Image 1: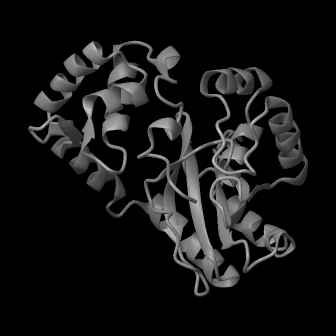
Image 2 (image 1 turned 90 degrees about the vertical axis):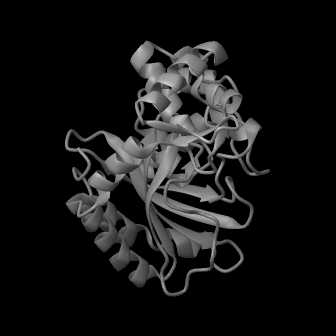
Length: 267
């Protein structure tokens, strides 16, 4: 499950891909804060502005205000990252958080049962963000990490999210972001994506068959909020040459049990 935060061409939404979502001043500030806090910081102003879809001049003004108020930090050389107030907020949210403890406990049970790496990921804007990662006893070391952002259309978690969208929202999202390939197996056409998502809704699970990262095969089952909307998914990640597609699908019930245990946990 390779990340996308360091590649200009593979940012969620691509360079300038979120300009239509820049929105009001609050939207812009939040998008800039999210982009500046992405893994791999410090990030340059132009990189942050492009990822957030905010004009560079406006981004500079807003980010100066965020730095002044402690939400962002500047390294003095044109780089930005999360500031002390954001770090404090993150610590307050995560320390002793019952929801985090429940998610980790459930994923640890699943990881031990399956033996491979399992994740909980949620939609954050135009991407998926990994909230929890648990490596099972037979897991092979991989590149995924908590906080990593991943595309929606090339990942099993992302497909679960997309399958829960209304047709109009899906069409608008694809029109805005495009369907850039990550591997030779990636879906790059709207018609084939629609067909894939119909299968996800029918089966109740999604597959990433080396579509996001060569050699990595994943299965995910949707997680819903208290109102029944899909907010993310639980997935299991395997190395393709070690586990067949059939073996992966055979763990669907176990992954579904975990996903169902997390329904309503995050809202």
